[in-house]
Amino acid sequence: MTDYQRIILVHYHEIGLKGHNRASFETRLQKNLEALLAGYPVVTIHRISGRICVFLREGTGWDTAVEASELARGVPGVARVSSGFKCERDLDVMVDAAERAMREAGEFASFKVAARRNHTDFAVGSMDMNRIIGAKLCAAFPEAEVRMKGPDLMVGVEVVQNASYVYARSRPGIGGLPVGSSGTVMCLLSSGIDSPVALWRLARRGAVCVGVHFSGRPQTSDESEYLVDDIARVLERTGCVARVYVVPFGDVQREISLLAPPSLRVILYRRLMFKVTGRLAAYEHAGALVTGESLGQVASQTLENIRATDAAVDLPVFRPLIGTDKLEIIAQAEELGTFAISSQDAPDCCTLFMPRKPETHAKLADVLKAEEALPIDRWVEELAAAAEPHDYACPAYRAPKRPR
Ligand code: ATP
Ligand code: MG
Image (cartoon, rainbow, N blue to C red; front, side, top):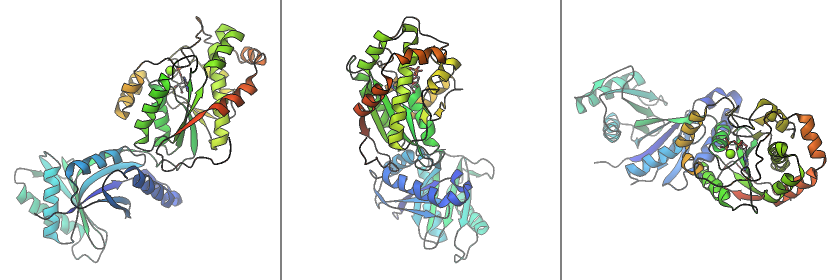
């Protein structure tokens, strides 16, 4: 049996709609895939007429190819991933390769051939290829029927300049835009369920995401920091997180709890978190803050409190989960692989020094008045300076070089 070179064909659609930006988006996606697939036996990655083709090393097994294509599916900007073979431009060889790809793709009761001739120096046109290859595959799989609408298996055949690509296994990707095509955002990352999902939503829209985690250290253990690191390691597999700043927040929280009215504590903590994040945003040239808040989910997530916290910063604050139900968020976190980590308990800074009855409808004037008694600007500078950066694999990210 001939050993064909395995390929993974990455399809994207949204990028195709972006007019003159298209070339830079394609380059970005290609670079992201190159870096993220570095752990796999990849020979090279090329762009071919509206797709990106990943060529795997000769001798690469099916399991490895599937693993690499599963990873590619989760990379922002990828609409679909197909796996198959590169082979000669010879109809019999193409049929043979298609047969192999079909057997590997698993059970199917119906199929359809979708041939495409990208180079007119091949004598047989797309329609004829469909007919000829389809007929031969019918003979090879007599129990399967050919179905034009909604077949179980779509067999792709593409003829390019010096070769042809044949594939059968095909799975949807997460879509969106390649990370690095929409600027940088700062994501407030607790070790909870919601904020990693919020971050991922922005990454899928092409933003480079820099996380900021406020730890209760030294007033609590550093457990939440380990959970956030575990979460970031999951997100970095698909290039969705660039860096996470860990801010030891416990001492300042304690001071606030001693100096400020108890009911306003939570709002004051949160405003300070926003201000520190805003300060780090300036350093990172980030254009927005992102939180995992969802309207009404907990006492602090009311319209009034949102207004009072937003007023702490000049930057826009994005809340991609504001209208999302908890069950939907959980489902997405499970799919991402962060849910099990987020479900572990860790004392984070928010559980620390919690008042018995937090204000649910804070008035901005009262909050500003309470802040007048506190050295907010000094704290912001000190906390931003104390923030510890942890870097993750995000091919589009360049860490700032200047001093903070
Ligand atoms: P999550 O599951 O994301 O923690 P939550 O439902 O527990 O959200 P809150 O604890 O009120 O809600 O937090 C709301 C948002 O504030 C979080 O989604 C996150 O963006 C931010 N946040 C909360 N605590 C921290 C923290 N310790 N460090 C950084 N950001 C935080
Ligand atoms: Mg939380």
